[in-house]
Amino acid sequence: MSTKKNAAYNVAYRMFSVFLPLVTAPYLSRTVGTDGVGLYSKAWSISYIFCLIGMLGLNDYGVRTIAQVRDDREKLDRTFSAVWQMQLAVAGVTLLAWLGYVFFVAGEEQVIALHLTMMSVSCLCSFDWCLMGLDIFKPIALRNTFVKLAAAACVFLFVKEKSDLWIYGFVWSLATLLGNLMSGASLRGRIRYRPVPMRESLRHLAPCAVLFISVLAVNIYRTMDKVMVSTIAGLDENGLYENAEKIIYCLSGFISAIGTVMMPKVAHMQLLGETERIARHIDRSMELILCMVSALAFGVAAVADRFAPLFYGEDFRYSGVLMIPLSFTLIMIGFANVIRTQVVLPQKRDHIFVKSVCCGALVNLVANACLIPGMKSMGAVIGTLMAEMTVPVVQYLILRKELPYRQFLKYVLVYAVFGLVMLGCVRAVGKLLPQENWLNLIIQTVTGAAVYGGMCLGYWKMAHKSFRELNR
Image 1 (cartoon, rainbow, N blue to C red):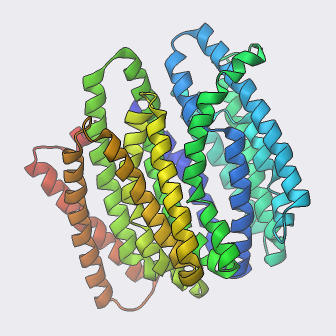
Image 2: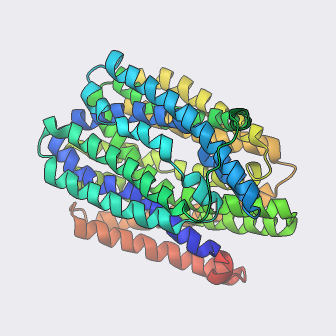
């Protein structure tokens, strides 16, 4: 299947995975309030950390490993079997640890946490890494879309008051498990499990664990933020931060979707020694990503203060204030993602990834500890900004002599200028339409899209680049 089709399917999959909970967010926010949203966010964040441990970096290591052996059926079957056996062992131990947490450690979030248990169970049968390594994205997208739609419908039908918050957790937890089981069924006829000695499975443990360190570090400043805010500043502040971060996380799905599609492609090209083709892919991907994330970052910053109270309710107005600086993490995430998925991981230079994200996690933890007590949720936003900036800076210090960073920074500057002009135009329209309603917000959004799109088309024409060439 072509890269464009895979990208389309993966974007759909990523978007539905995040977008449908976002669809239910306004309803949930008005039903359970800021403290209810904060309580669920705390329980889910802790559950997600256990799931990360259960998967042990397989979402990167597994994709790369399968991509490198997919042309040899015998090696493919044996590699899949060995990696899955390791996954079962690690995820099984993690599931037991999660149950220990639920029954002996969890506090006020215990009931919700218990109903999130299927999140950990789903780690036993998550085969997305294998399907993506095989360049198969359609089954993942279609089957998960169906399951997520059913889950969203259940939320509206059964969650009626704050005491029903456990139902919300149960529905999404069950949806995750069913999605994994249905996607795994797509491996029939494409791959066969053959029991291998456990020592062969354990050979994958060390390289997988190296990537897990970086995955865990990333989620220290994407998930632990919420735990720290709720613990230090209270559930209300965490509810505000959760809804601000939810929008940014949804938009970052575009970035991760493209990176996920490109990583097995580049890993395969790396195996074939196609150096020039890889360089061309990196350059085009970097420009496409930076064009897209600059539009999203400056666009969100322009309308966030109006969007939040309209979308979540008046109690969440401050979420819009938090969203403005948080939106600029999209540019840093996009830049770092291209380097990670198309340079570092395909070349098996995992240590670069580990160093960069561990530095980011350390910066985030220190910033949070210093800023959250005084600035509450805004302190977490600043800590996240500092962490996301650290990752591409560390990558640059290591790779500056190997990659055309001057060209990359030119892309950043060009599209940031376009974004800044768009932001000014959208704000100007907002002053002409001071009333806060959906119609005026749509007018602002359309204005911003037209201004940004017009500037990009003019720039591409002047630089002798067509839109088709940019996306080829």
